[in-house]
Every structure is written in C-alpha cells, then in structure tokens.
Length: 145
Image (tube, rainbow, N blue to C red):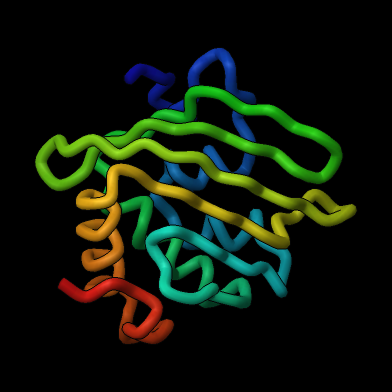
C-alpha cells in the first residue's frame, strides 16, 4: 500500500475532492464535495444516510478510523467514477473496497456507494462508526457489536 502523503493516491488515481477529503480527514472537506441532497449507501450502513450535513459527519468520522488508506485504481464513465482502495484500521487490520461516486452537472457528489471487505473488519468498522456518529445521524444506521 503506497500513495502520496498529500492525496493518498497511486499514479492510477487522479486526486479529486473525494480523495483529498480522506487525506485531510475533514468533515468540511467532504461537505465541499457534496451536493445538498447527497445520498450515502454503504456495506457498513444498515440504511442510506441522506443530506450533506449527515453524510459529511459520517464521512469525516469514517476517515478518522483509517490508520492508512490508499486509492489504487479508478475508472470514470460520464458522471460515475469507481475507485478501488486499500486501508488499515484497528491496529493494522486490512480492509479493501470500492467506491462508486455519481456527480451532478456542477461536479458535486450526489451519490456515494462504498463497499468494504472482509466481513469481520467491515462489521468492526460499522460498529466503530456508529459509536462515533450514531448519536448525530441515528445509531440504527450501524451494526452494533
């Protein structure tokens, strides 16, 4: 797993607001990338999280869970981009996944779909994310250990 410190991307991935927000680990950086009506769907969520304020809280907290995260590959077709990534959390446990981003005509993200694997680390991630932001967006969105 290697990427540049500033953007945590490999040469296969173009730095963009999404990857830069993860590098910054900032809810506000995520908010700047989102449309007002953004929807977040994820394997770590029991149900979608909607709206810029809620999604920025979830993503800001999620980025803080990762000890390392590198975006390794991307492909774009029209308004959709799929990005693969590798990460570590919880004392070096590996996570891998993919993210599908859909943008509007202004380039703002209107939909983000995130898949994590393997299952045990996904469940730990969902539980920790719920512990961090469940009170703000609803604990029922997250797995509870």
